[in-house]
Image 1 (cartoon, rainbow, N blue to C red):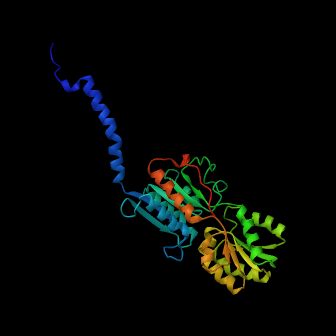
Image 2: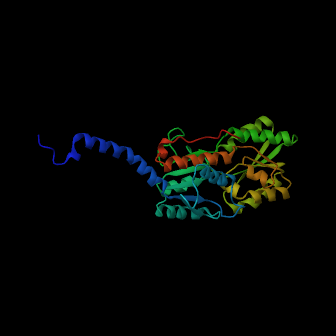
Length: 305
């Protein structure tokens, strides 16, 4: 019998070679991924100053570190700051898209701006808007697009905060509500229902821009408000120190849903643990960078308060 010209090409050898190749392929891919530096865009309404930062900023950074993502080592973060000027946001989002970042982090309602800039780059939100009503996702269970992440919406807490205020100041009957009507949530509606049950009269103070804040607090004084409750939003969070300062001058105790207001000098806050939520958002970043699609990752709601 004549020996094969190329014995290494026999079916058995080819099968073994193919099997080894299939086993080594994932290892090679993992090694390639391990050496990759991911480029992440971070869209921020405020500024780089510590006074502007929120607890969710550090919460997300800590969450990324816990998962092994170290800035300058395996991730490069492209920060874009609007400095409190919303008109700058579309241009900043477009800049991140031009850079072809692997993923965009969108705190607050930055998800809207980021989503309008790209329908393909994954977006991880940390949203104080209602993401379904705002149109970021089709549903919490099935986002269906390029946006997913965590939401800090928990409507029932708006009424609970009025109850806590009434416990802290039992004689109170008139409360001013500082809220942003362009922010998609049910805070004011929930407060109205709770106020009727508590015998509290609410005074609506709409705030759409920083320039309206002084006038709003003056209106609260003219309306003989005895306290100020602040509906959380990116705008009120950005202005929190000024809000607390003006309210103190008007002798108005302040209550809100985010801990930053208490840290700035407000009377009390009660709301979602946003630092924990931000750490959960880091898990979304990790899953997406490892190949998961935002459309398949359900949006998380708060579980700790």
